[in-house]
Image 1 (cartoon, rainbow, N blue to C red):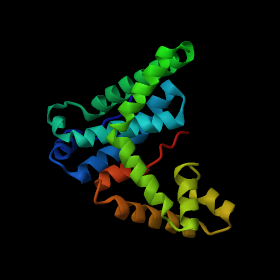
Image 2: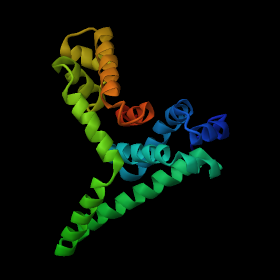
Image 3: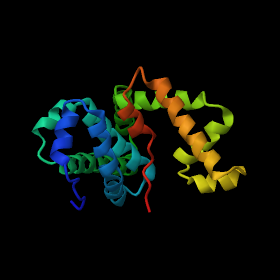
Image 4: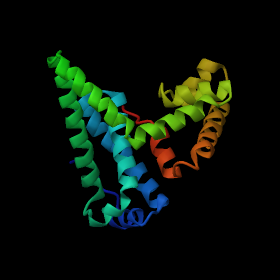
Length: 199
């Protein structure tokens, strides 16, 4: 694994296990992009990469107490993401090779499983909040979040200043956080609203 560990990783991991969102956020910011790049190298899909890494962080936060027994957060996250990526690759291979009724049954079962996935429920809450944004703010947020455009690129497209675009994004994230704060922590909002930027 070629991800450089954060200096105070053990301390941050233990603090996260105790419920510190600040420690979790620090770990997230350090490992999110490097994990994304490793996953993308395997699966070659930005959308799947983002889902895999986001799901890993959501699961970590929801089961944070188990981090007390983890020696290396980075290595643990790498293994978690790698295993999920391999599972996804197997699914893709299966879908390409088999075109039988059995495959339809398996897909139906996997869709039922997805209904029980809290990450999907959280994503839906965020989508609902995004839909309530003022039109211009929503357009800016979606270009930033889904199209992965930089503030400078959005400003040119919309004929607005870069400062205005940044303000729209800031206000949109603030509104989304306020809208979902009763249902999920600020850490989860951060995980699910941060795009993976791949060079």
